Amino acid sequence: MSVLQRLRPSKRSEPTPPAGITGTLEQDALRLIDEGNAFEQKGRMDDAMPCYEAAIRLVPSLARAHINRGNILLERGDANGAMESYGTALVCDPSYAPAHYNMGNAQTRCGRRGEAVESYRKAIELNPGFADAEVALGCVLEDLGELEAAAASYARLLQQIAGSPPLLDLVHLGLGPDGHTASLVPGDPVLEVTGQDVALTGS
Image 1 (cartoon, rainbow, N blue to C red):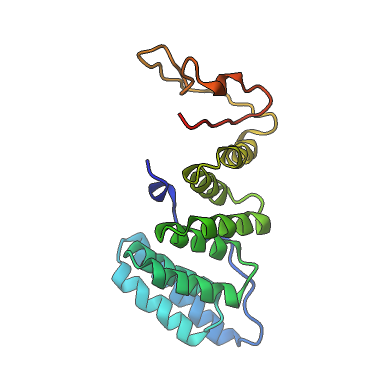
Image 2 (cartoon, helix red, strand yellow):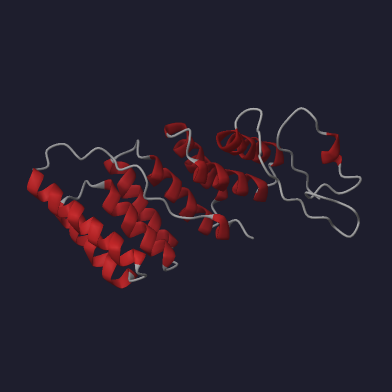
């Protein structure tokens, strides 16, 4: 599975409503976002997009609306348009971790992996439990050949899921024709690693 196939958009963690917005406008904008989300769940992206754009017209500083608009653009293959939307969301709320994460996804689509790494790291800094961002960061670092940094990201994710040291109730292991299991191939230098939970090699 490629790094792009492992990325998924995030809408989690609603930001604090922008200051100076009247209750009615904000409520109407949030209702439009909810309607757009409902259309998205049914796969009706062409109906969802006008909802998000109408919400932006009502409350231009609502980061969530810009993110949802960007997610649809990214789904349509318009990574540059998505980055513009995510960038606007970050202007509205620089501390909104999902905006940094989704920006990283768009940057990855454009081959701007170095910038994506920084976006994912910022998302994790703002929300240390952001599992999707850890996965994406590890994938991009792995693609860049930064195996130690990728392993550290995967290790943090494993600790989030299974504690430190990780405790797993069940592990399903496949067996290869040469006798290897769990991707541990005889002669691979990763077999010599004992002081960390995750290790990667270039083989």
